[in-house]
Image (cartoon, rainbow, N blue to C red; front, side):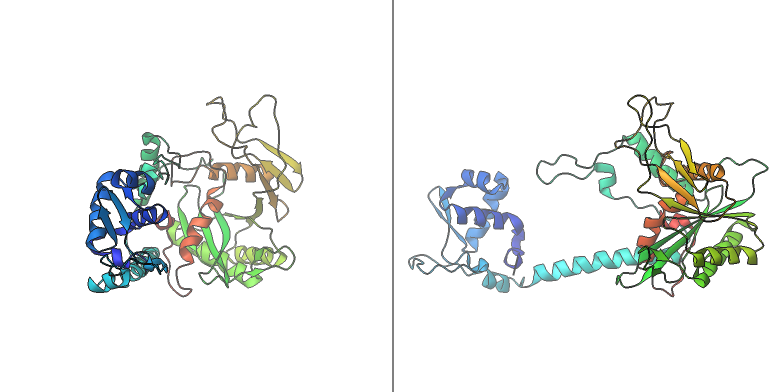
Length: 417
């Protein structure tokens, strides 16, 4: 029955804590109960009186004790109950008398359903609303207090940094461009595509989360693809030739719709290796759009070798080492000369970049990835570890998993921030 009997007069958990304290040690004074039950003094006095009104406790002199049958709500029955005292009505009877039977279960189910419905409605509403909204949890600004002492557990940035983070995101959602990548006049117009995967809400099917498409300005669009399959070789999700081709074609179509032109160069980022089918599919899509420059980059986030430099600080941000003709080690986080220190809490983990096609300029690929780590407009931090193409993968996937397969989705990345 839970709190059903206590739903009337807002007794709640304070009543349960007092009853528990009296069950462990009967005949306590109100002052003693404040300490043994951890209930504030004023609340303890009010709650004890209400429990007495319900016939669950009795007051003898300065002490309080449970009456016989008071613990039957826990399934405890006292066989040697005294007959000279007024027996409690019992929790079930109290709940029925006040019309609160089952209210706790109904309230819990209602709140659970409301939270789920709100989250799904908010995620799906992105395709219908014309403006991107900014939601901020209370804990983002106040921190998450500990249950024991009320102190902040989650470390908070200073107010100025939090304000910059919030208003940078708002500025982008309002249609502005906070900053952009540097681009030389001789550089090709490039379309950066991040491919990631997510599971459906049922957990049975693995879908392509997105082709997260960005240009040099950081303007992003989102495209959902087909169902991926887990490879028996590396246990990683992969696309078929046709799915890879269609995913990139859809991404290029959204790119053209958004920016008014086709890119001259395509760069695809992926956290798993490229199969032959994926490589062929992406190249077929580029050939259909007559795009000659295609770079397919496998970006490994774990297992890369580490570098060490003289002194106590880690390598500088931007340090890269070409291990061989087909792999580049890149530190996207590290010591910053301007700060004369490393602005981080943990040892920085480098990225290992492996091209899936020949002819890729590893130095250019590394510079692109380093620049894309500065393009997350959801905050004002300019030294993210992952490039924007991969950084957004989890956030977008966690939203799209709630959208039905046939439903239209919002394509602008601002809706997923």
